[in-house]
Image (cartoon, rainbow, N blue to C red; front, side, top):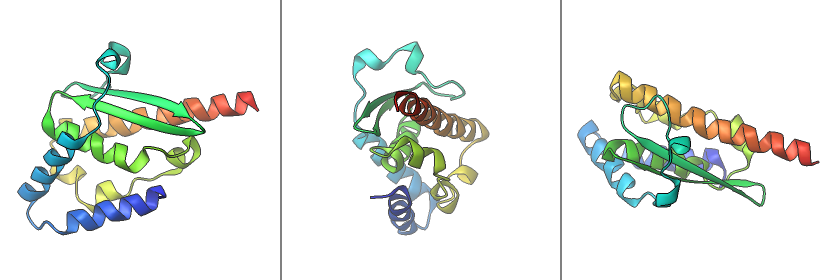
Length: 143
């Protein structure tokens, strides 16, 4: 699936919930289903700066695609990173760099987060795009 198709699925899922408390509960459930990061990857290098809670993000590059795993010490934050992983996992660096991730605004996520959580969301997206940038440059160097 393309990033846009995945984003559309996420938007449709969130449309089922009218109340933000229900949406938060859904985000928390998604966090519980998030693929576990290898404990060895819970390092300072994988810690995302700018998040109120601790968020670790690891990235593996294989066959021209990026594969992410994450963990957080806060359930809502883990749910948020799991949404980002769902949208970007298994995509090419180029597609990740070009993704506008409009689903974040479409589902109203940013406007319903506290300013510190909103900053954390921005930091998570930035880190995932930095991985994509690094691997896209590696690809260019290897060509």
